[in-house]
Length: 174
Image (tube, rainbow, N blue to C red; front, top):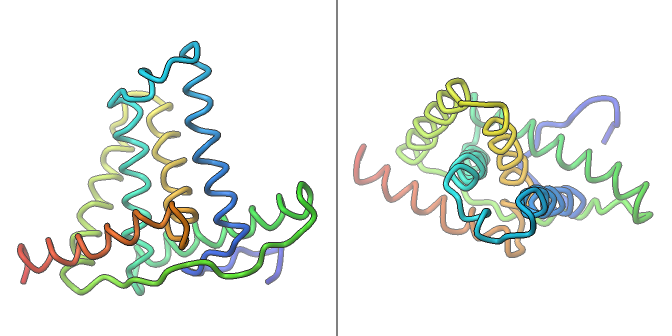
């Protein structure tokens, strides 16, 4: 993998998964300390909705095999892998280039559900009240495209979200 360009991929490496996990912990730790170390602040919908939406959109987009959703999620996953590799080399002294992704794919109907959710997320981001909501959505998206696809605890989103989208798509579209 060349460090000059970002590879479009849907396979998360261990370094990418670690970066997504660090971003997950860092985002929620920042909010925890910002609100004077109160866990009740983390339960607010104004934080959970944008973050969860970004995470869910990228998990579903990564299960699309091609098209716009595949390009966006593949670029985000590739950027996360590359960022994780750079951070790993500098911070822990390793590359972490081992693939740790689980590969679930959306059906045709499930892909349309993912496209609709992606369009709604773009509208949410466009009409967001402030930059904080956009940043939370972006943080959730990078986490979803990296740690959310791994075979670790973060992969629960992919393990449950992809079959759920396929089922809903089958019910609504056919």
